[in-house]
Length: 237
Image (cartoon, rainbow, N blue to C red; front, side, top):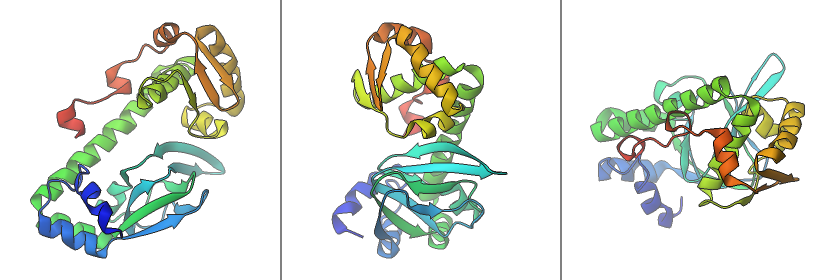
């Protein structure tokens, strides 16, 4: 892996409190690889061989069952995935594929577990990261179960706006069919919801989203930190 990347990894919550010796040993066996768009990285049911760290690009997490497929989440840089399977030496519960050209650093899972056993600070950081991941999925489940389709789409648009420093015009980070799956809708239901949101201050032009009335959209979404986050910094960091 590139030497200039190591300081950035050292600042990640998972790695920043670990012993220098532990960090250096993991970086020595880590390697990076570039992947094209739509490349399958891992498959659900397979045992975790590596911890993946997304450096550039975007990765989609998805699950399948009995011919059905659902988008579970989108990973953005710089982030790790899927830590739980690596820690537990267990099969992946989700598959992952790139959405765009991506660069990923991989650390062998067996070496990761050995480092956790000998470095208490690293183990605590891993517990914290697993806890944050659990809370993220609980929030997503609450969003799906407690909001209707219009409220879910409104909250998602506001979240994307906030991630882009409050812009009122943005491009959807995924295809509409993937967005529909992520928000628990069929593509047809998403299409109807998009049309309905015109009255709530949002206009769609293909994948372009334009917020025309932020106050009205916020009133519909009724954002709540216990669903939409963020966590207090002492938890999330």
